[in-house]
Length: 278
Image (cartoon, rainbow, N blue to C red; front, side, top):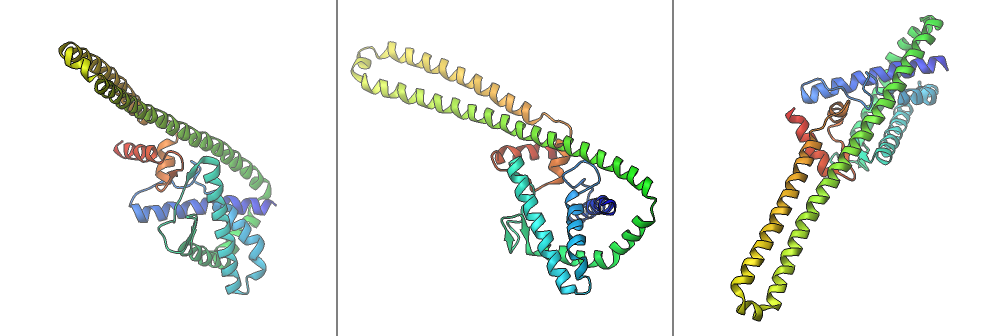
């Protein structure tokens, strides 16, 4: 158990390094990738633990090792993507535009890459890591692991709070947006009702045209002014809300550039655009 916990911590860190390097190549800048704030990607740690545990007996057969790695890592990635979407109501990565994808969670291109990477790791990297873990003092290792996992747990809690705050912010933006639509709809309905009433009373209007016309214009002007004032207040509230930052918000959005909100995609897009300007 101790060795596997060490492997989890080490591969979580190496996975984070891989993600950062990949992002740097694609974007030309540093991006703190990964779900957590710290320099770890737990999905890599879990993935390698599963591969080591299940596929070590297949080390002599590279084809079986490759196929097993592709199957196990792809299954883990699909389950993780599906679970994150259901729990946090957002799609954290999306391979929908990549050929041979499954639900946008996994695709053939990266599945093959994980399979090849696992062969290299199991052949070259893992034996060296195994020697390092076995030669490291066990007592010091347990203390270090305790610290690492305490920090990771705290980080996980903080990240979950950040994501929940992001979802709440998007919900507030959607609420304001719906109120704006309601004001516009109500104004349109009132104008429609006024026009209909005028048509129905066309004969009376002919007799009292000047008086009624002035009264209708005043009423319409007052109604429109009130509606515009309320809309302005709502737009200001929307801008204020979209400009409201909180701990971890910018990092989580930068770390997952393809993040899509299932319920409030339009508002998340505007929030991303606002953050780019900062």
